[in-house]
Length: 366
Image (cartoon, rainbow, N blue to C red):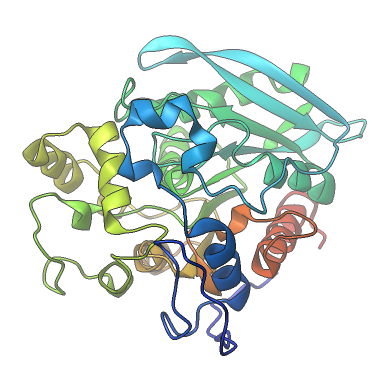
């Protein structure tokens, strides 16, 4: 299977109606933006109060009020769904994982998913539709991990929760009816960041991973520093971050809101972690050689686009097997909008692409 960087552009139809929402887009704003997304956002998202515009406690009182969930859904039925409580170690405790199993004698291949949400938001509902699609379309067991998040559990707890879930899956392969020699993992945004880190952990511990799947990953957020008053090519090498820092649905301030709750509010302490700890900034990892096969998904209208593609270059330059695909015209969260009647075409494309990839990786067929 060969997935390559997409460079096509989506043409925006003229005279799209602009709604009265404060975050609405004008017809000529952001040329090349996917027309389906523009229409969906203007009609259903432009009145939104974003999570980063309120306190974390306000958000938690009514998450749906501050989340753009139009065109998301729970996903198709699968053969079997079961929640398990598993032990974690940093600090000691328990988390829940949700196991989606296909109808097969097994043992089946297994993929672990680490959801997005900036290490602060999200849960087992966030990517349920994608997990269910992968279970059915790729004929694999999918384990969705409900890792602990900030502000209660700051960096690096979430990373080690996900790593403990990988090790738990291998140790409990027989009861899960999965093949520990056919294991992959991945995640979206924050989940993509953690998948990048865990690939290094797996290599260093000699654990065979078939694929790590990095979906719009956060691999270098040093440009989110509160000490930077403006982004320039000198302090931010990623053009996408400079171009899209003021996107109405996901601006730079939203990323800074996440980091405040995950790294703490002290700007200098944030900088210390971002600039010195590769667990937080994977592009700083000391060794990129001999990592598992990788596939990196990026979105054209996403400030994190270029850091994800740069991470792919680092992997490729070190001799690893890497494929990448940029989805044109769409925002960071495009993969969520997969409702059968009102979803984005690019989201459906993403589901087909990733299910084919996981079938090929685990079964050798497309």
